[in-house]
Every structure is written in structure tokens, then in C-alpha cells.
Amino acid sequence: MVLLSDVVAVSAEVAATSSRKAKTTAIAELLRRLDRSEVAPATALLAGELPGGRAGVGWSTLGSLQVEPAAEPQLTIGEVAAAVDEVRAISGAGSAQRRAEALTRLLARATGTEQSFLVRSFGGELRQGALEGVVVEAVAASSGVRAEAVRRAFMLSGRLPATAEAALLGGEEALAEFRLELFRPIRPMLASPAETLDDALAELGECSVEHKLDGARIQVHRDGDQVRVYTRTLREITRNVGELVELVRGLDCRSVVLDGETLALDDAGRPRPFQETMARFGAQEQRAELLHPYFFDCLHLDGADLLDRPLRDRLAALDQVAAAHRIPGAVSPDPERAAALFDDALASGHEGVVVKDLDAPYAAGRRGKSWRKIKPAHTLDLVVLAAEWGHGRRRGYLSNLHLGARDPDGGPPIMVGKTFKGLTDELLAWQTAEFQRLATGGDDWAVRVRPELVVEVELDGVQTSPRYPGGVALRFARVLRYRPDKDAGEADTVEAVRGMLRGG
Image 1 (tube, rainbow, N blue to C red):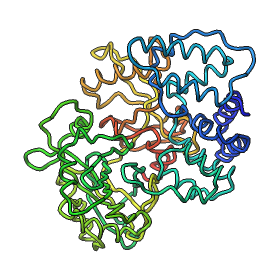
Image 2 (image 1 turned 90 degrees about the vertical axis):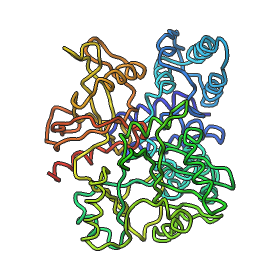
Image 3 (image 1 turned 180 degrees about the vertical axis):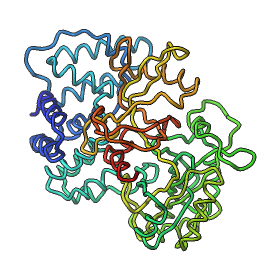
Image 4 (image 1 turned 120 degrees about the vertical axis):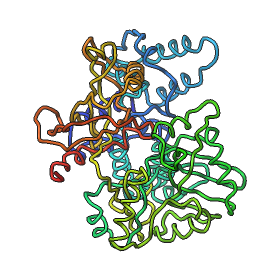
């Protein structure tokens, strides 16, 4: 039987080292000690999540709890999981008070160190998308199966605890049972940046070149007349995008899974601001802006899963079912045609192009080298770590952002710079309210926030600097927009930021 204190100790050990190998070894050693019933909840806690997911507890509740800690460790993993389930199940009148009482009972049985861990877990402060990769490797090491088998099962299931349970209890045979299932979204395949279009074409050989739209990623599942639409973070938005549902319901097929982008267009056919597209995803009432889908991949068609098929086959399936809604692009273009597509994308108000290897399978959830994106401006997706209170006309607003890049070894985001530029009055008001909701501490100078908001910044480049932990500093960074369609695990890595030193 493993105690919560064992998980807390390993979590602290992982946080204290920068070595990915050491992190993986520490987690793997603990995983080997778990009983069958402990695997799923312990894996969740090690990945910085609550067993079963979020429990609906806000920082206002957590911050108000003052509980005398237990003298000695006593809480088991099973007891923690049961307590989290109890808190999650509370609803209705007086639920806030009853949640606080349930949390108080749990924290009273925890030591001071365990209390801190539990509060941060309930608040989402420990969750780091990059840490999932370390836990995946630890699951492979502890179970003796291939890391690729664990990674694939996780990307298909979207549930790391269930994946760990399958690996540790059933091995590779159990992992192989995870397949693409209709209405269970999978993590999207991602593109990595390339310096130039010519570089990408030379690297990938026979490829497709497609417009990179300034829209929002969608994944659409259909089975018969039933259609569901998901965002890139796997959140279902079906009820908010009726026009997409009706369009896919009208396609000539029985079942399909499509990957693509959607965006709102103005009367001239140019993309509306990204925020207007995202507003549709959370709209509580009908809005005037219509969303237009542009699909670029087909992952399933009429009972056949296509994930492992090369892109050329998946594009053939896409043409079969949704040719009229395919994203602008060309297959195997010569350099002149590829350059023309790039210019056309920019002229149409889009971001650039994506170059894709025609022989590559669909690597769900991976940002590999089979898809390369090319944009004319330097942009980075970074995590907001804190914000400073403004002065002058910005007094009363949280303004200067502290920005972090993702640690590829699973640690917390690494600070690489600050910026207060590019913030409109609307954004200032929004982020001031949002940051206080996500606050984990602060003073009269600044507010620290949970590292989960992703912001896209444009910059002139980076320079070497000892001022920030990342060893680099952003040059003339300015905010383009927040990315509610991305989580911290999709932010650019500190290595990508440092790579801009070489890229000029």
C-alpha cells in the first residue's frame, strides 16, 4: 500500500532535478510499488492532476481553509481518490460550504507537506502538459513495454491514468486494444516551425503544401446522423457550432473523423479576428458570425481507421468525402507553385503555409518533423507566469506579463521575458479579472498565476541574457492574442526559443 507521502516525495524529487532521466527513474520506481487499484489515481497525481479530473474547487475556497496538519503521514492513495470523488459529487444548494467541509476533513488527515500538495493539486497549480511526457516514459520503464506503445495508447485514449493501468496490468497487449473510437477525440497532430519554405521542401521531399489559416483547430466525429465537434484541447463544442454539425451530417458517408480548422469570414471572404472565431465556441446564444470549415485530414471513413496510413491515402479519403471543404493547397508542388501558395495565403489574410510529408502517418499529439509550418513573422506561444500592476493610464490593471517557455523535461515553465506591448484596453480588463481568478499569490507589485494561459507573442528575435532562467530574452515582444484553444502543454519549448538565436 502506497501512501500519499510517497507520491509527494517523488513529486518533490522530480521538481528538484533538471534531468529527464532522473525524473523518469523516480516516477518509474514508485509506479512499480503500486497495487492494482492505486495505479490510476497515483498516475494522475504524479502528472499533476486529481484522480478523475477537476473537482470544481476554486482558489477562493482553497485559500480560506486553515486546517491543523496531521503529525504523521497516514493518507493512502485510495483514500485520497475517494475523498476527491466525494468533493466532485457535491452539488446543489449549499455546495460551497459542503465542499469546504469535505476538504477540511481530507486536509486534517494530511501532513503540512501533503496539505500543500493537495491544495496545489485541487487548484491545478501542479498540472504541466510537459510532465505528461515524462510520466509516459516512466510508465514504459516500469511496465517493460515500448514507450511508443504507451504514447500511442495515451494519445488514442486521452487518459493517462487509464493508459498506465493498461500498461502495468496488461502490458503491450492491453495497450494495443486502445483504438480510435468515434466520439472519443484524440490529440491533434502538430506542426513544428521551419526557417524557410525552401528548407521545409528540401527536408520533406514529396509533400503537400497547405494554407496555414488564422483559425481554430477542430476535430469532427460522425456516426450516422450523430455529429460531435471538439476543439484542439478535446473540449466538445457541438451545441455552439450548429452550421458545422449540419454540414458534416450532409456528407456522403456513414461515419467519419475529420481534422481541420474553422474560422469566421468577413463579407470579402477574409478571416475575421481570431477572437471572433473563438467567441463562437463559448457562445450561450446564437451569433451572427458563421463558421466555415477547412478540413486537411481524414482519420476514419466508413469503418476504416486511417491513422497509420500515409498522408497521401488520408488525403484521398478526404477528397472522397469532403473535397468541397478541403483547405487550399497542392500535392507535390514544384518550388514555384509552393512559393505561390505561400504568397496567396498571406494575401488572403492567413498566417503562412504548412508543409507535410506525404508518407507520414498521423502522429496524434506529437509535434514532430513530418509537418512543418512557415510564417513570415517570428511568433511564439508562451505561458503567462505573472503580471505586474500597471502605472499611469494602466493603474488598476494587471499589465506587464511575465512569460515562460515549456520545459521539455517536464518541469515548470521557464521564464524568458516580459512584455506589456500590444495589450488593448479590452485585453487589459479581461486579463486583470482572469489573472486574479487564477492567482496563486502576489503583492502590491505583481500577481502570480497558475501556469495555464497561453499567449501568442510576436517578436523581432531573442538575445542571450542572464536576466531570465531560460538564458535568453525576447526582443521587442508584443502580444498578438491569447490562445484559449491551447493549453500549457502546447506552448513552445525553451529549446525552440533558444533556437531563434541561431535562426537570427
